[in-house]
Picture 1 (tube, chains in turn brown, cyan, purple, blue):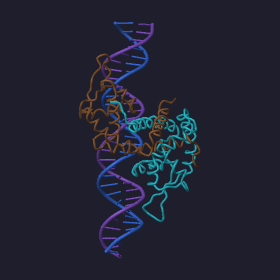
Picture 2 (cartoon, rainbow over the protein chains, first blue to last red):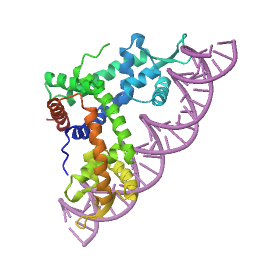
Picture 3 (tube, rainbow over the protein chains, first blue to last red):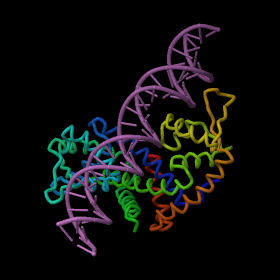
Picture 4 (cartoon, rainbow over the protein chains, first blue to last red):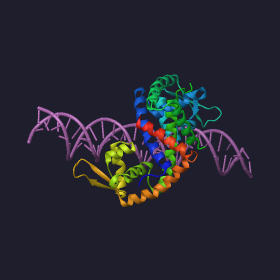
Length: 143
Length: 143
DNA sequence: GATATATACTTGATTAGTCAATCATATATC
DNA sequence: GATATATGATTGACTAATCAAGTATATATC
């Protein structure tokens, strides 16, 4: 009956936590007209050299499929948050660059996102949060 | 440029981790013909008194909307994994009971799920995993 | 006991993603 | 240098969810 497997109950809890965090973050970012996924795209672009990445790199960074990236970026390009660049060394590649408009929006959204994140984690001390991030990173890296 | 906010980078990492876990778990459960969401539904039903819950309780437990539950349960009922019961004290309520077939499938799937969970968390000691669950629960409870 | 409000659930329309197939280009091999 | 294979990206068809609106029933108030 009751779940005796620690690892299994972690997965169940993890999934529930995700839905809670996702809901809160999406609600907060909606006032900037973007979703959490779009925010993540901009986050990775903002931290990349030249604010530029290949689409497949974005897919891997965010954790969605290549086709998901194509569909996600289309409206972002129409709204001039990003710009399409080609790679002269490899014509298969479509580079994505965070535009000036996109960078500004990202900075604004980052303030909301930061407050939201602080709020959602306010019950943990810095040490606990660092610990949590460390443990999460081990799960991500699989080491 | 680089994210100085600890809480914010936690949220980004959390989202990425979720996509990784979701993918792996869904892949594992697909051999039983169910999704992770369906597994969670059965998990909560299996642990409920009489293996029975109201639909809105299921929605809250799993972290999806009421309409999401309606849409999710429809095929599960057709496949006889769950049964619909009415509440004689409140005709608005539609009770959901895990069927015998559903309980058997859940037990089988729990074995796969357990292995999958062990595998995904194998790099953490029991103590670390307990610690991770505790920290996650604080985020969930907001205390 | 009629009326207003709240709760449980379902439905129609929409959205964000998936996968499988495809196209274009690049790279390796003979 | 022709051919096979691999890689990056897009598209069509589909799925799992959302929200807003609607229906049915219950509860509280006058």
